[in-house]
Length: 338
Ligand code: FAD
Ligand code: EPU
Image (tube, rainbow, N blue to C red; front, side, top):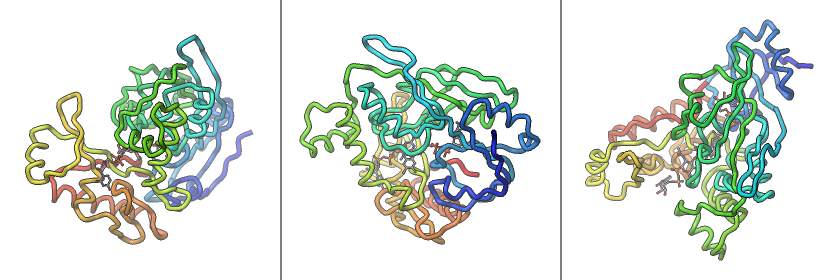
């Protein structure tokens, strides 16, 4: 039976820890509840799907219906000598799912350890870290059409994954509720340690032939050292994307800023480290009405002292302006703004 709550405060359900009153709130634990929900009059209101609330900034109350996806369950769908396909329901905690795979020695997700949030949101922005994005291990997902009430499967191609992008953030925005995701993982313990910081962390740990658990531990150690724990300091991870610019523009910037941090891309463009740009505007630790630029990682904005969504948003606008004035580079927000 579906329990509808009204005037529900989402403070505990977003990692910025911001007050946000939703007109209506429901939590879905079983697929059948979706049909039940569709028959309620409140279903016609504007809808927001919520997972772990770790990539959302609430700047105002939500006038509509919040659907918290709490569909749980993990299963092995297919297995051969080399690989497995595992399926996780959307409400599974991402990191717990990664740990489940590591325990079974299914390889591929270990670099994505400790990312907050739920499995269902992972394809939304093609989560990525330490040299891996979910598109690298994605097999298929199932989503519920919020308008027709039908289930549809999406293949890798149909998801149109890009850097922190997918079809669900663009053409199909607000049209589907992802119910489960399948990943293709390998059984041979080949690890991906190409991302510089992982190798130096493994060296520190005295490990030369790392297992997937070692890689996960290294990633966890790096992340813990620089990213604020949302349980202690409100944040949503990187607030902005790392901007992509043309190589010619990069060469001009490099003359003026020889230490600028950048990564070459396959398409000939260059990705700039937005954290470096923000830091070199002198904004590390900068505060505005309780919101601040994190002092260990300038790409992360934090709710330092009882701030509001509006103040955090205004701080983000200020940061974007400063970066533009200094480098002529436009930053794009990565966090979903409500
Ligand atoms: P939410 O914040 O609840 O939702 C995010 C978006 O997805 C919203 O638009 C929501 O409507 C939509 N959505 C959620 N669930 C569903 C669903 N089932 N169906 C349809 N739409 C849905 N991200 C990275 O990519 N890499 C990182 O390294 C990383 N590090 C982070 C570190 C910290 C400390 C924090 C706080 C965040 C970090 N993030 C990172 C961002 C965040 O963890 C991811 O974007 C995560 O996938 C969000 O999951 P969530 O369940 O919390 O989504
Ligand atoms: N840097 C600075 N100053 C800073 C922050 C970063 O100079 O304050 C420079 C450093 O030179 C560093 C480089 O930027 O070497 C890159 O920093 P880092 O390795 O911390 O990664 P990032 O580019 O800041 C991205 C993702 C993270 C992901 C890490 C690791 C984006 C928007 N962010 O951050 O994802 O965990 O790489 O792969 O792509 C997230 O999306 O929420 C997130 C945390």
